[in-house]
Image (cartoon, rainbow, N blue to C red; front, side, top):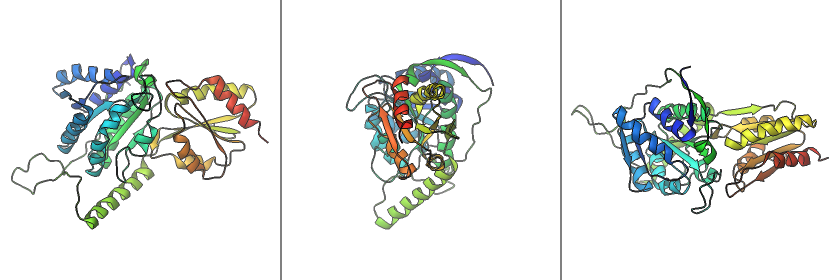
Length: 353
């Protein structure tokens, strides 16, 4: 590994993107992710890249569409209502099979909500906030170190499958400062992009990037192609952490910042003789269904904990597939589930006959 620095999460996102070869960033300021743009504005010029503060989130995502069409590594970032404004362009990009990295540092909602951290964008990111049958590859880091590593990884995976990738973090991750150890050299995958619109040199037919298919059979064929790609992504790119799950009485499902709290609950519960495990999805899509299937018959059941009114819990219930009970505990409005409250919920589940 290389140098070790104390950095804020948002700044690490930007630094990781630059180290991954991103030289084009288009965005619009919104709390709690504005430092991503601040960092990019300074560093892009030094590296000869392009930084544009667009006139709106809608403009920014369409600029990203253009740069991606030219085969460039490109990124945008925003938070919750800003991501909502980008959804039309995200759907276009998924259909046109354009690699890009989108960062969503989530704030509480609905509506303008507030600037405090939340996990209430799960539905709009994982289930597709735009229209059509598409998927984004969604990474959910739980530390600033993981923010760095997953941003670099997201660029590689996005290029590999010609599919938009998302870093989904809550406001705590964006604003907190932690030590980050950077690699001396990033594992950048060099992937040819013969589809890119970079000029023909009068030597080939024009490349066309589009998301419109007027004829029904042609559009269905394209949809089938996309679905086949999504199946390959599900087979090859699912990431998950299984923590203390073997022999557990209760398994908690959580991601991001909440998963950090749950790890302390696991330790506290052990002192009371309650065996608790944690399944932490690192990719929210593809979702780690097999991990939940493996532990579906955990003696006392499952508990999903989120900074939302309950969104990922639906995927947990689908994965468990009726083989066990799945309880939920969540906080909203920018509140974080407290360690003591989660432990009390675990006690209740463990005490069932």
